[in-house]
Image 1 (cartoon, rainbow, N blue to C red):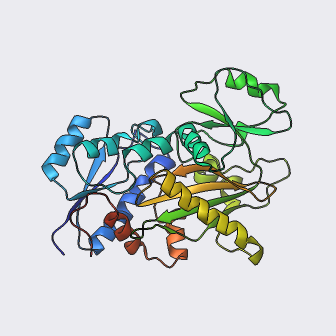
Image 2 (image 1 turned 120 degrees about the vertical axis):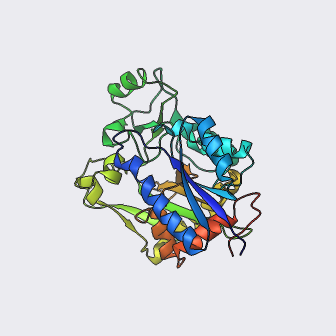
Length: 330
């Protein structure tokens, strides 16, 4: 294998970062370890709003490719597209999805519009900033437009359509930052997908089980459930890969929809599609994550293990799927 230099690019952390932001360091460490295992030389580089500085550093390093782990910029998910934009302009091959799919999937409403036009089932949604005709017989959730990691999302964001507080709240919010989605009170699935030559591989499906949630408590995998380790939500939202025979038809629907999302959004390398399944058994896409967390405690890492794929091999497949790559990992 020829000498290969990779720059692992990741977001510069803000002062006193929360666990959701600092988690990228675990991803850097595991990716670096896997690349070194394959004999790739690795340099680390932080990405910031000082694009000129990042560009100069990339030019000096002159990598064969970049492993893009930028999840936000200045802790803002709305700026995540800046990393692939800069790398594309410099014609440096990089892992993961390219500029357009990264931008579109980062905006939850832009992604939902594309799903709708492609016939991919997604929950009804509304803009904020003015009163809306909410159905009093339905439940809704106010969600951040751009942020991953459920930043700003928890059960206090769930409202009955009959609750006048919902319209009072949405009238105060910025449409550049929030939107409202119909809340599907059903089963939740996270389906990871990994490049595999010409066609991607949908990995073992994972369900998030809301264990012992009391009646009336909204089933939300929000910030608390993901990051606050001593909370009820963290301890009682558990991942399972075990299913009964009665779920086989549903799991096949999830697999096909995940592949459809990969194709419709022109995803690359790796991704995750999050679903809710309604009371009639219909899968509904909540969102598409074009750069999901791949730290050792992440759902993506667990799905690789469950699918019998060593993470070193997963990283190899992600790298070799990078467009315009001239040196591949053998």
